[in-house]
Length: 111
Image (cartoon, rainbow, N blue to C red; front, side, top):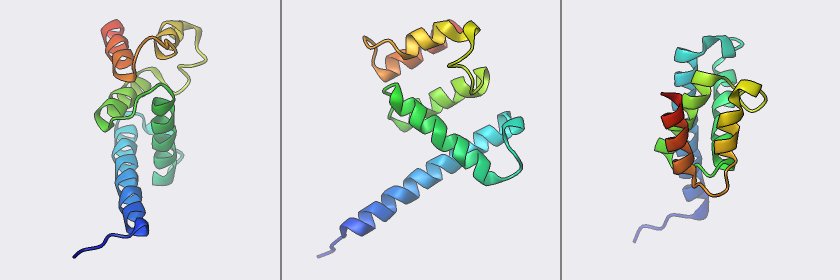
């Protein structure tokens, strides 16, 4: 019988998370090269930040996190502090909406 230890599960989870961060980092590098200071690690740090911000809004599924990443790439990392983005902040902080619903509304309003 095959036994997978906790440390092995953790290593597999970390590997999946790291690969997901690299995917987001490639999106950032392609669409917002000005956010980089010249190293891939910068883009991975940005990717980690985006994933954490998405989670804070109730966005957890990979496909939904990527939708949130596209929003941030389009509007900028400073969307939370910009007066012209108040509409997005209202949506993202609306406790009556689930994470995917917030993204649906952001996308609807962005058209």
